[in-house]
Image 1 (cartoon, each protein chain N blue to C red):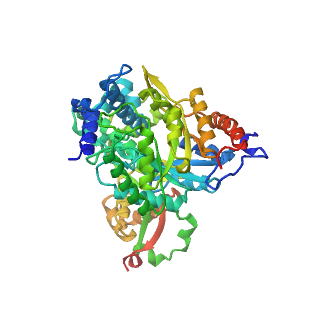
Image 2: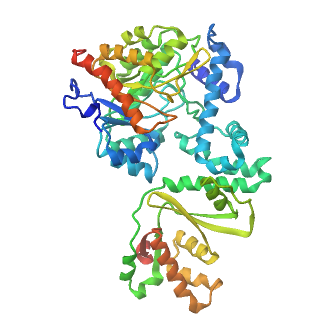
Image 3: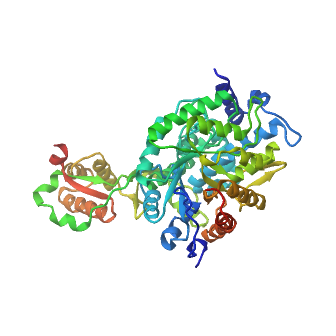
Amino acid sequence: MSDLAQLQGAFQAYITQHDPAMLEHVVSTPAATAEQRLEIYAEAYRLRLLETLETDFPGLHGLLGDVQFEQLGRAYIDACASQHASIRWYGGRLSDFLRDRSPYREQPALAELARFEWAQGEVFDAADATPMGIAALQGIAAQDWAELSVQVHPSTRLLNLSWNVPVVWQALDADEAPPPLSAAERPVAWLMWRRELRPHWRSLQPDEAWALQQALAGGSFGVICEGLQTWLEVEQIPLRAAGFIKQWVSDELVVELRLSSKAAS
Amino acid sequence: MQRGSAKPERKQRVNEHFLGFGLGLRPDHHQTVVDQRPPVDWFEILSENYMVAGGKPLHFLDRIRADYPMVMHGVSLSIGSTQALDRNYLHDLRALAVRVQPRWISDHLCFTGVQRQNLHDLLPMPYTEEAIAHVADRVAQVQDYLGQQILLENVSSYVTYRDSALTEWEFLTQVADRADCLILLDINNIFVSSRNHAFDPMEYLLGIPIRRVRQFHLAGHTYQGEIAVDTHDQPVLDEVWNLFAEAVRRFGAVSTMIERDDNIPELPELLAELDTARRIAEPLLAGGARE
């Protein structure tokens, strides 16, 4: 290993683990010892990453408070090095960390809140696409509907959440006292997407969540209608399914309705 | 509101690279810049802030770029690292440059990590022959890839390595000469490092070749005990303004900007600070410094 590589490895090991091998490479002066000088870097490293976690997880920060959030952040920083060119992506593993590590795994709502906040960030700067207008629905021939597939906006995310974290998040965001964390009887599907540059979300009934999941996977309108029999009588299906499409289009969630045969060709 | 750049005499455009007086563009000011088109000659963007797929960052980037000249400034090139250059990063950087068409692209003379880690900090290089050869070789690769010269910025430092055999300004100059790249001189960083390593900042300025300097940064700093720390969260201090005046005397008309990264104030406060830079530089430039 070259002298330069060795020096850089030692510097990094001091910053991340306080490995003392770096001390001998640095000059002490009356103004500050080698250790004091290196400590500026070690602490700045943690403060910078803490700051980015605070920015990306304001709800978690609000819920835990400054002291506990900093404890969490420092534990995460010690466990998870950044491997990204941009600090923007540093918090991507925080939800998994909360899910897997004690004492946080004993409060599963925390991992869900982190997942919800991280998804907001993903929605915020996902790729752009122009949503289709509601008027375009008029031009679709009746016989084509069964073969139509829905191209959704690239920012679209579907999250299944067991806890009331979106409601808690919204209260924290508005600087109001959050309701107590509570678990639903079964997980609730939440649709998240970007509209007019801002993340939006709403909860979905099980049939709409299923239909949207099919749409995201490329399933045609015909396939979606068939599957809806799980929830609806056959005669109810066309109206309900058409209602979903209309709602998605007016939510600016749909980029294009495409004939499946064309998409496949 | 009338501000310095709107004055009819403006500054003397003494060389084609002089963009005037700019600011670091920060997301806090995106909307205000679009709404008010403030009297700023140019903006520097942090490249990594816009290396995303879409949404608000790129929406504002395109709108602001339509109204202002821009330069790109990165923090993750890690040009001094002994780990291989990050080809994905370079790819994204080049793609952003195609979108922005910046006047130039800069990063720091430092390393940010090894072993595929990124510490997101600008760690100083040892001032050695080995480091000069290493950096010069990598700058050549980057310049080939981007198809243009890049600027390297001097970083603030809090450590002196036992291995260092040169002064910082000798090191910076030799890297720039060997790699044939340009220099972004951060006046605050020179001041901070001069305090931390007890050298004369004037000696630093005099040691840097005039023709290599393409841009100045101005920023604020704070103190942790005896050590000056480059926090970029405060207004520019008087001693840095004084050093800036000396830099203008030596280097002449160099594109100058205020770089505030934290504790970001409302835009008018930064515009007022930029006016201070103009008030200092313009009489010196009118007096015929350099070229």
